Image (cartoon, rainbow, N blue to C red):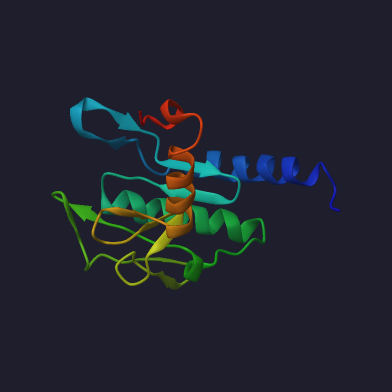
Length: 148
Protein backbone atom coordinates (compact mmCIF):
# COMPACT_ATOMS: atom_id res chain seq x y z
CA UNK A 1 0.00 0.00 0.00
CA UNK A 2 1.43 3.34 -1.02
CA UNK A 3 1.43 6.65 0.76
CA UNK A 4 -1.95 8.39 0.58
CA UNK A 5 -0.39 11.81 0.06
CA UNK A 6 1.77 10.75 -2.93
CA UNK A 7 -0.95 11.18 -5.60
CA UNK A 8 -1.77 14.63 -4.26
CA UNK A 9 1.88 15.68 -4.31
CA UNK A 10 2.26 14.28 -7.83
CA UNK A 11 -0.77 16.23 -9.10
CA UNK A 12 0.49 19.42 -7.45
CA UNK A 13 3.92 19.02 -9.09
CA UNK A 14 2.40 18.31 -12.51
CA UNK A 15 0.12 21.34 -12.13
CA UNK A 16 3.17 23.58 -11.57
CA UNK A 17 4.77 22.23 -14.75
CA UNK A 18 1.59 22.66 -16.78
CA UNK A 19 0.99 26.21 -15.53
CA UNK A 20 4.59 27.12 -16.41
CA UNK A 21 4.10 25.76 -19.95
CA UNK A 22 0.61 27.15 -20.51
CA UNK A 23 1.85 30.55 -21.68
CA UNK A 24 3.76 28.96 -24.59
CA UNK A 25 0.63 28.96 -26.74
CA UNK A 26 -2.60 30.88 -26.77
CA UNK A 27 -6.01 29.30 -26.46
CA UNK A 28 -7.17 27.05 -29.28
CA UNK A 29 -9.79 28.75 -31.44
CA UNK A 30 -12.77 26.50 -32.01
CA UNK A 31 -15.74 26.99 -34.27
CA UNK A 32 -18.48 29.40 -33.25
CA UNK A 33 -16.06 31.85 -31.66
CA UNK A 34 -15.27 29.52 -28.75
CA UNK A 35 -11.79 28.99 -27.43
CA UNK A 36 -10.20 26.38 -25.20
CA UNK A 37 -7.07 26.46 -23.02
CA UNK A 38 -4.13 24.76 -24.77
CA UNK A 39 -3.59 22.18 -22.01
CA UNK A 40 -6.01 19.65 -20.56
CA UNK A 41 -4.84 17.21 -17.92
CA UNK A 42 -6.10 14.37 -15.77
CA UNK A 43 -3.57 12.75 -13.43
CA UNK A 44 -0.57 11.97 -15.68
CA UNK A 45 -2.46 12.25 -18.99
CA UNK A 46 -2.10 15.56 -20.78
CA UNK A 47 -3.73 16.76 -23.99
CA UNK A 48 -2.39 19.68 -26.00
CA UNK A 49 -4.93 21.48 -28.17
CA UNK A 50 -3.58 24.25 -30.39
CA UNK A 51 -4.91 26.04 -33.46
CA UNK A 52 -1.49 26.29 -35.09
CA UNK A 53 1.24 23.75 -35.69
CA UNK A 54 3.90 26.21 -34.45
CA UNK A 55 2.01 26.65 -31.16
CA UNK A 56 1.95 22.88 -30.69
CA UNK A 57 5.69 22.60 -31.36
CA UNK A 58 6.41 25.50 -28.99
CA UNK A 59 4.25 23.90 -26.27
CA UNK A 60 5.95 20.52 -26.67
CA UNK A 61 9.40 22.15 -26.53
CA UNK A 62 8.48 24.08 -23.38
CA UNK A 63 7.06 20.98 -21.69
CA UNK A 64 10.17 19.04 -22.70
CA UNK A 65 12.43 21.72 -21.16
CA UNK A 66 10.42 21.81 -17.95
CA UNK A 67 10.28 18.04 -17.64
CA UNK A 68 14.04 17.82 -18.16
CA UNK A 69 14.58 20.43 -15.46
CA UNK A 70 12.41 18.35 -13.08
CA UNK A 71 14.29 15.22 -14.19
CA UNK A 72 11.13 13.59 -15.51
CA UNK A 73 11.07 11.89 -18.89
CA UNK A 74 8.40 11.79 -21.56
CA UNK A 75 7.62 8.46 -23.13
CA UNK A 76 6.84 9.42 -26.74
CA UNK A 77 5.94 5.82 -27.62
CA UNK A 78 3.07 6.02 -25.12
CA UNK A 79 1.87 9.30 -26.64
CA UNK A 80 -0.14 9.97 -29.80
CA UNK A 81 -0.55 12.96 -32.08
CA UNK A 82 -3.41 14.00 -34.31
CA UNK A 83 -3.15 16.96 -36.66
CA UNK A 84 -6.27 18.23 -38.39
CA UNK A 85 -6.15 20.74 -41.26
CA UNK A 86 -9.30 22.10 -42.86
CA UNK A 87 -11.37 19.36 -41.22
CA UNK A 88 -9.22 16.46 -42.45
CA UNK A 89 -6.54 14.40 -40.76
CA UNK A 90 -3.07 15.55 -41.85
CA UNK A 91 -0.95 12.42 -42.14
CA UNK A 92 2.23 14.35 -42.95
CA UNK A 93 2.53 16.42 -39.76
CA UNK A 94 4.58 14.79 -37.04
CA UNK A 95 5.71 16.04 -33.66
CA UNK A 96 8.68 15.17 -31.50
CA UNK A 97 9.42 15.27 -27.81
CA UNK A 98 12.60 14.19 -26.05
CA UNK A 99 14.17 13.98 -29.53
CA UNK A 100 11.80 11.13 -30.46
CA UNK A 101 8.86 11.18 -32.83
CA UNK A 102 5.40 10.90 -31.31
CA UNK A 103 3.40 8.24 -33.18
CA UNK A 104 0.26 9.49 -34.92
CA UNK A 105 -3.14 7.90 -34.32
CA UNK A 106 -2.91 6.72 -37.94
CA UNK A 107 0.19 4.72 -37.06
CA UNK A 108 -1.05 3.48 -33.69
CA UNK A 109 -4.65 4.00 -32.53
CA UNK A 110 -5.08 5.09 -28.91
CA UNK A 111 -7.51 3.98 -26.22
CA UNK A 112 -8.96 6.66 -23.96
CA UNK A 113 -11.69 6.11 -21.39
CA UNK A 114 -12.74 2.80 -22.93
CA UNK A 115 -12.86 4.02 -26.53
CA UNK A 116 -10.41 3.54 -29.35
CA UNK A 117 -9.52 6.51 -31.53
CA UNK A 118 -7.82 6.35 -34.91
CA UNK A 119 -7.41 8.58 -37.96
CA UNK A 120 -10.96 7.88 -39.14
CA UNK A 121 -12.08 10.53 -36.61
CA UNK A 122 -14.71 8.11 -35.33
CA UNK A 123 -14.39 6.37 -32.01
CA UNK A 124 -15.18 2.72 -31.55
CA UNK A 125 -16.52 1.49 -28.24
CA UNK A 126 -14.41 -1.30 -26.80
CA UNK A 127 -16.32 -4.58 -27.08
CA UNK A 128 -16.19 -5.16 -23.30
CA UNK A 129 -17.68 -1.73 -22.64
CA UNK A 130 -20.26 -2.28 -25.38
CA UNK A 131 -21.37 -5.61 -23.90
CA UNK A 132 -21.69 -4.04 -20.43
CA UNK A 133 -23.67 -1.15 -21.89
CA UNK A 134 -26.01 -3.58 -23.67
CA UNK A 135 -26.50 -5.55 -20.45
CA UNK A 136 -27.21 -2.37 -18.48
CA UNK A 137 -29.57 -0.95 -21.07
CA UNK A 138 -31.87 -3.94 -20.63
CA UNK A 139 -31.79 -3.97 -16.82
CA UNK A 140 -34.50 -2.90 -14.38
CA UNK A 141 -33.80 0.79 -14.99
CA UNK A 142 -34.38 1.18 -18.74
CA UNK A 143 -34.75 4.98 -18.70
CA UNK A 144 -31.50 5.45 -16.78
CA UNK A 145 -29.45 4.94 -19.96
CA UNK A 146 -31.83 6.83 -22.21
CA UNK A 147 -33.66 3.75 -23.50
CA UNK A 148 -37.32 3.03 -22.97
